[in-house]
Image (cartoon, rainbow, N blue to C red; front, side, top):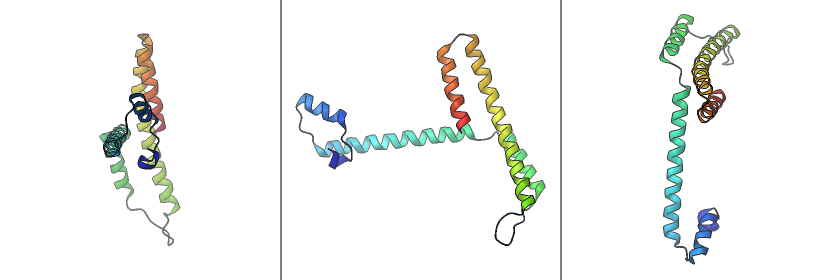
Amino acid sequence: MELTFGSAMPHMMQVFKHHNIEPNCAELQQHADKCKHDKLEEVKEMQKATMMRCKPSDEILNAMQEEAKAFGKVKYERDGTMKWEDFKTCSMMSHRYVISGAKEGLKKYKGCRRAAMAASDIKQWDTVQAELARFSNQ
């Protein structure tokens, strides 16, 4: 099993031993491929959901684009790096919008968490706490 599939798959081996079955490698390979495909699809969906949660609101994006247009074209040094003043301005601009987006997201979780606490709904409070932790790590 380990040589064929790259994993011992202990749960499958227990089933084979319990039912005294000789494994059919072709069927197992198909099953392993399907499981791998399903897991990859699940990971892609999770990544897509994470990207959508991290996406700034349209008003923040529009404000950032307007400020960038007003700033104009960035100037570069001979070695290809940004001029210090332009780098500093761009960094401050992006930092300001990241902070405003984070505050917006935190307000949403704060209200949900307080509502769950007021209702004494521990399960909902735990769910909101877990989502808040994921949001904070993004």
